[in-house]
Length: 466
Image 1 (cartoon, helix red, strand yellow):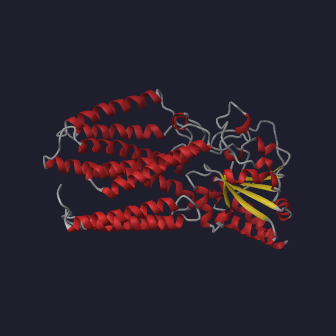
Image 2: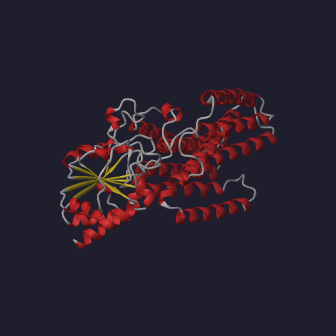
Image 3: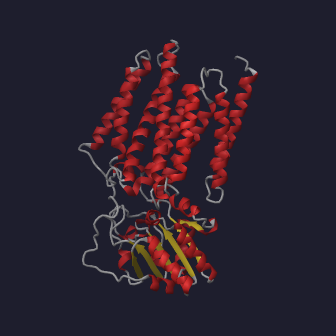
């Protein structure tokens, strides 16, 4: 075994330090209270890894590295300053895609570099890991582009099912495996890997395009996992320890989160990927002949001011209206009046994992007020008011009783157990699952129709005047 030089030893030790920071960062990202600290740890780990890599002996010129750092830094800074909180799911989706695409390009570059040096061995580890990186990275890139397009409204959010969809995807996978094996055993012919890339580009599109808006949090989480696995595979191509470990951490965490979110919807990952559940969101109402009474901000203010306990359920409508700041202002006003207020966060509320937590953190909502489904569900029966702001499917009682419903069996927030239910919504239209919500028509329910920000702002004004 070759003895390590002093530089190589220092490099590996610093890589180990960065890996430790990644692990502590991931651990702290598991709770809203410690998420910012986790982000700092992970960023510091990445900073160390990048700086150490810049001193690698194989670097011939820093010109394009500097160009990339400047361009990426500028784009990242602009995105951080300008992207709205409503567009955060799109940004996460596109970042997942860039990670997968970068892994594919780096693996291909290293493959050509080794091919030029005649250092490839038929059936060797490098060829296998290059194939894996291309497969996963390309699916991630093109699948993420479709997810971005759906979330941005460039493509219809409802499932788009192509003829012979599942059979076609199966053929793509089978052909990819056969051609990838040919590329692995014939490394001097790069055309095999480029055919694999083309097939995986098609699969990335056809895999995500039939998935509806309600399932986007699961898709984003899965693609995040794929981006990590692609990076880890590329780490084996480069024999870079920090890339292997960090990619594996992201891949494992994303996969665990994916299955947790599937459990939160009581659906299998297979059903999410191939079930074609959902609509564009806000589609035609299916209320039939039933009608409801529209209440006003004055009615809501009186009920909230005289309540002892209020539980607020935020949803995607809150993000769309950008009402999180004024909602937190309302919470603070109620607390001054002695009202106990809590937030109930469903795991799949919004359009990406943790969407509501991020939204409320931006409004400086205290972390101890944010309760997840298991923590808060028993609290509803002692609540005077359950205030639903822009949520729908995650509060739908049909999930308990209607066996033919696509959301049947999904754990929901028990808002109907509160003494009164107050729902701020633009209309009676169903949510992304396309299912009518019987909660709208219950006698205890007060429907407040309109933009969430405008309605909550009116309520805040009335509370200040009272």
